[in-house]
Image (tube, rainbow, N blue to C red; front, top):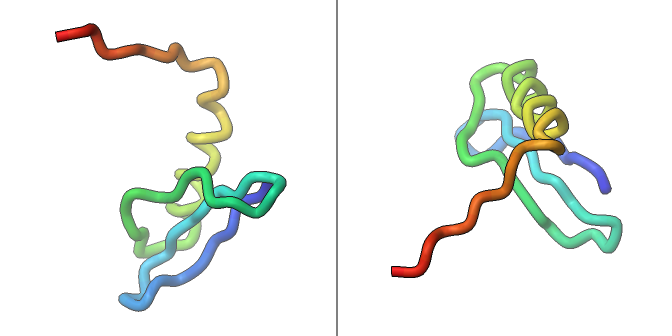
Length: 59
C-alpha cells in the first residue's frame, strides 16, 4: 500500500491511499491549503487502525 499526495486543479493538497494492486481504496474528503495538513490527515488515518467498526442496525 502507499499514499499519493498531490495538488488538485484548484491548487489544494489531497491524498489517495492505494492498495498493493494499485487500486484506490481511500482518499481525502477535502482539499488542504497546506501540504502539512494533508500529511496530518494521512497520519490520522494511519493511527486509526484500532478504531472500532460499527454497523448500521436494520431498519
